[in-house]
Image (cartoon, rainbow, N blue to C red; front, side, top):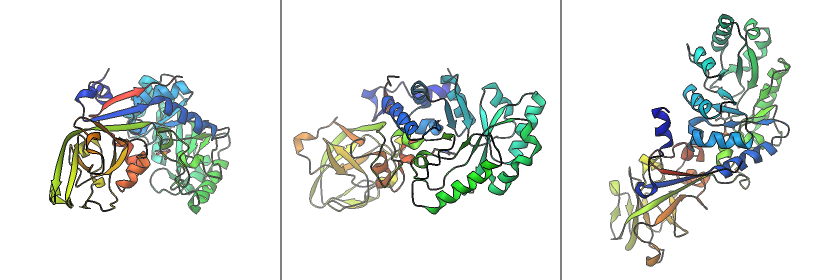
Amino acid sequence: MTKTEQTSTASRILPEMAGGLLHIDLAALASNWRTLRDNAGSAEASAVVKADAYGTGIEQAVPALAQAGCRTFFVAHLSEAIRVRAVAPEATIYVLNGLFPGTCSTYVEHDLRPVLGSFEEIEEWASFCRSQGGKREAAIHVDTGMNRLGLTVQQGLTLKDRAELKDFETALLMSHFVSAEESDNPLNIRQIEAFRAVRETLPGVRASLANSSGIFLKEKPHFDLVRPGYALYGGNPTPDHDNPMSPVAGLKARIVQLRWVEDDTVGYNARWLALGRRRIATLSIGYADGYPRSASARGKSGEELLAGQVLVAGHPCPFAGNVSMDLITVDVTDIPENEVRRGDTVTMIGGSLTIDEVGRRAGTIGYEILTNLGRRYARTYTESQG
Ligand SMILES: *Cc1c(COP(=O)(O)O)cnc(C)c1O
């Protein structure tokens, strides 16, 4: 329908023409949502689909989640919410980043709910509702420790006395964890207690605190609704334990060229040295595809470096040199020569190279790997079976 929608789905890139092949398993996405729902006790399980459903594609991910039974979605931006509405006509949709001045009528036009994070935003929404003569739903965000977005806890405790609350429907009270993936971090309990205190002043209002990792905390801070994002897409919400989720995203690249390099450097700025004769494969993917340049390998062949890896014919092979814009060079010397040929596909994300592991090797987190998944990949999807 719109230009943005076509670009975002990138459906015109055929696999044989693309440097990177991205596969999204919508059945695994749906199954991850059910796993999270089953771990959330009696709370409703929503889905966080901001940043184009963490890079997997709003237009594909949202219908798969809705079909699995998800009724409530969270995005960061109004523009994302409008895309969700186009594919989920019945869903409840919240916009996390708050109410930008002058946007109330856009919310109403698309039947969206803002997450109000300050008294100014609350006042703007309330006065819009008064002028329209209708009580519209919104969420209120209380900041219990992030110091980023939302009312302070002190302000939250005075909410019940504000006249504006009578002008709209507070459909949800929410807050967000600072470090739920660290299960022993004392901040978790402090945030749960602060959130509970605010909630007690607003009886009858539904409450939501847990992100993916929050769902798995031993305190079970599920309240009435949980808001998983990362775990839906296969990220590990319990980094100290095995991943209970199934992988959703798989990425392959192609070998463009193979060459022998002897006692010479590879790539920009000559940051990697082949000691003796090394066989180098050049892959058709680079940082312009969203693969982080911070996965570059700077050092010498044979050294253990915290840097990117790729699976070639099933074997892990280390990056060699700096990640370029459109290319990555890797050391395939240890793979039998006849097992590696021009045109072969290799695995960048998949198998032992989980999104968490790719993130770790790039000095970042799997979230950043997912949300940067490139627009010029040929994307294929496994349908979910409902
Ligand atoms: C992104 C986000 C989530 C989802 O967090 P994950 O760690 O990806 O599960 C939940 N709530 C808010 C407010 C968020 O911004």
